[in-house]
Image (cartoon, rainbow over all chains, first blue to last red; front, side, top):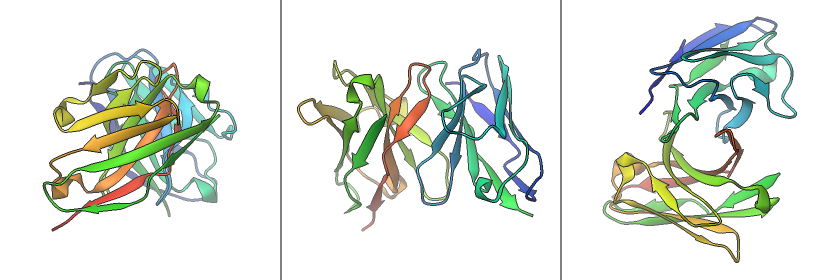
Length: 107
Length: 118
């Protein structure tokens, strides 16, 4: 199975801050990398697929980049509604696997 | 767009089985695959299995081989996940979700809490 390592596991930030999360795969996954947001008590929500394609309706302050084994997720200007846990997921092969999650908390 | 509605919360005793349903509506013809995943309290996401709605062909994660069974009823656009030999480690929220052609999970059910307790 492909292991996904996501860092940091948590980050404290203020409204307006730029937040960056990294995700690393144990083997090349091309651009088969997806990012999700999960708020407490809710199902995850797809934000970005194919490493950099924004899902419809997702604000442009969210972005993703990378290919191969190293990926970056960025929130350019953190908004109050962005405080949540974020997960990366590889869809290169089965089983799909997830990073451990990054909790974005209010500073 | 697809809406997924799952069955309600369950409380089971160790050793029992649970069956969770997932009913799809909307643009069901667009569904490529359906995943089942789970999330233990305070933990991350774990993939369990997938089923292709048209063929009914399932694929199971190694960790759940022999314990999980996926079935579907095409007449009602419903997929079922049956998990047997439950232990307290199976206490989790179980999700069904649709999968896009890139392997991204684009629509999620609301989740079903399964609690295993004696």
